[in-house]
Length: 175
Image 1: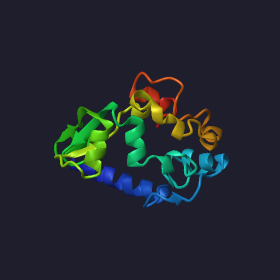
Image 2 (image 1 turned 30 degrees about the vertical axis):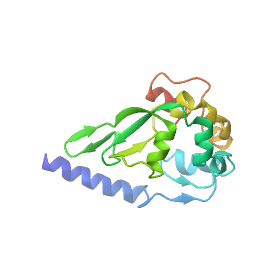
Image 3 (image 1 turned 90 degrees about the vertical axis):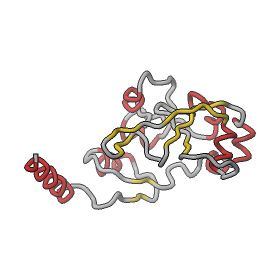
Image 4 (image 1 turned 180 degrees about the horizontal axis):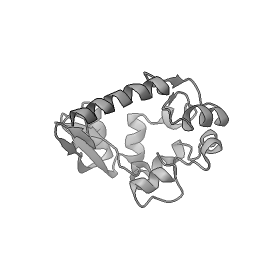
């Protein structure tokens, strides 16, 4: 087993030397589709794209007051973990978050520190809280990402139908 661990460590170093960056690079704006595909998708390299969605109304509209008005009374799925790590290995176990049903306003109260609760609370659903539980907010985002579609084929952040499974969601360009 020690030999396998040693080989995996060597492979990791060699992979970094060959094609991976030591850190994930930032792009200040969306690249043109050809460069995105050639430089990032083709070689399977990660990057962080800044300002890709800076024109979305959600960035200025989604204040706590706006969200309380639009969806505050909606009961949604909320993931809760003791430390913020979920769907991850923790020690010798794979852990998943506890899922609770709460009003959106209750979640905002916790996030804003108005109410103290144990744990880390976050709105995350594998196949999209936005579509499934908060459709009132979809007008604040653009469903279609044209530069991504030009590089990958049709790419919609908000698909026209809900996926059957998380894998289906990823396959159709949801994540």
